[in-house]
Length: 541
Image 1 (tube, rainbow, N blue to C red):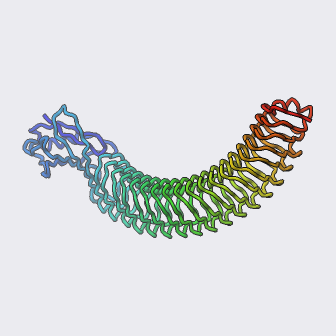
Image 2 (image 1 turned 180 degrees about the vertical axis):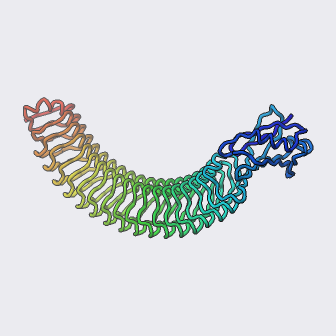
Image 3 (image 1 turned 90 degrees about the horizontal axis):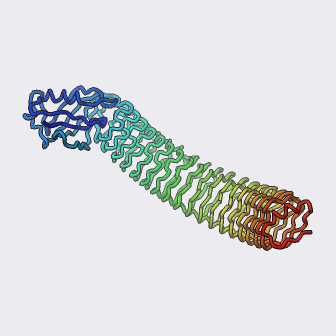
């Protein structure tokens, strides 16, 4: 006694008994009875059995038909609007079943639609033939068909639904017919074997994530008919080395080429006005980019992590450089910011470790938080008279920055603005400044002297802590409070004149060379003991 076994469209295995004298009619009925149905595999209306290329008749027996373990057996099932051909095996009961052979599907002629999720998760489906009667391929129709290597989309199809071929990881190439005008959301997402795709001139929109994570896609030509490329359309296409964006495109979506790590150059057409959020983020091979003078905004993280980008010209049309726009562009050596720019947002050039010089135009009124943080090669910077505020950590850890002139238009120096600028030897704080933020000059280990203007009323937490070379400081009578750790561990500070103000604990802690402080009122004396922890010789007047 033997068995015939095959894997169904839904992944279930059908196994049924085969006796030498069983007829074709009886075997077909038994196969129908043994099937496991679900939303994909519904009632089978017809079964055919091929032994080699010969069709087994209803009346002949298994023995007469030549059914044996050596036979090449195909079970053809007519289901719904599809005919499914399954490679089958004939073996002895008790043996282990190992069915990895994929099967093919022939959509019935006359069908007009492949419905939503029709063949979802059919992971042994190898090939599908779609007749030219079909006009629509529904959302998710073939998603997760991981063995699907070949599909022909006929010219009758006008709509390919969202996620239609998502995660078809064996699909190597696809031709989209010119009857299609839209490549829908995630239509070919994560088709990790897709090396080539032909987009016809009829397409006007490439939607969100259409080819996202197609990791073998090396090149793509976008036709002149396309006006919009949606968010993340080609994100994660790590083999994509070249792309031509036609002049018809007016909108490039967020993260559109994010993590295209092989993309070496790109030309943005004059039709584009905005480089969107993360558009080229982490394109680590991108060495050059041409930004046309039609662009008015460079969005957040637009070129963040483009570690090969050595130079960039920002045209005079740009008014806004977004958050982290060029963050971690570690090869960027120089940049010219045009005088059309009014805002350099948070972290715009953070961690551009080769950036040696930058000129900020006088159109800028605010230097955002962390704008030049960790630009470790930045030796000089010119801050224009138009700037009123230097943001949090704006120049933090710019370890090569030796001097900076703060114009008298500035009223606020943000927290940590120059923290860790270990080469900063001189700084002039103008009389316009009313607030110096926490840690503003912390660990500026080369800073030798500083004059605090009489516009300042408080020296805040850790403002000059760890400035090991600071030998002298002038504190004006306007100061009402010196906060905790304000001058902590300023080991070179020998003399300081302090007004009668409130001095917090550890304000001068660890200033081991400090010998003279004047004046100290009696009512402050208890506070001074805690304020001067670690100071060896203290005199008061």
